[in-house]
Length: 216
Image 1 (cartoon, rainbow, N blue to C red):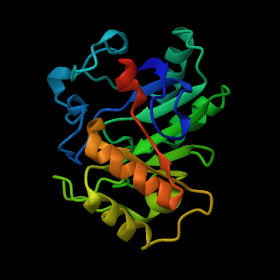
Image 2: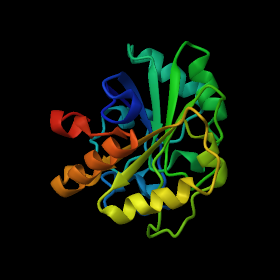
Image 3: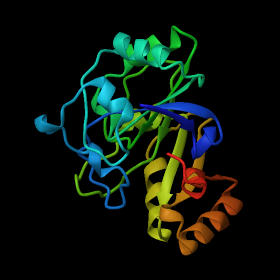
């Protein structure tokens, strides 16, 4: 749990408190938070240790929604935008957590791979980055696609765009859904492909600006 600036997607540049939940069965090869994949018992710790841990540490804790809100208040964070990420946060029911933060005047955003049903408050902004054909062999859930406010698709080659086309043609998305392409690892070839495709389709380009700024 840490305060920073949202570096990608629709809320790029917005001061945010990130809550990174532990556990993920998706298995993306390019994942930059692989320390969140497992919940080994020897890595369980206190919330105090979580607040000061390094980004690549596998340490995790268990805490209730109401207790986490109290931690947020005690830390005196000023950002009112709460980003619930992972790992894969939607392996959990996030309704209580999102409603608890909304009750103190915050806005919640969930970042998900779309491989689990999204259970959150009706006001929660859902950013779905569909992870197709990953090591975990998990399909993208129809409910998650229909719930998404934003589809932010990681792209390396034209194949990734073709897969996105197949995916979004299979379901009726929200009329106001935002679609953006995000080049994987800021590779020049992928970035050029994303720019060209966004221009042709009037989609958005999402760049991981936090990596350029060297912030968490």
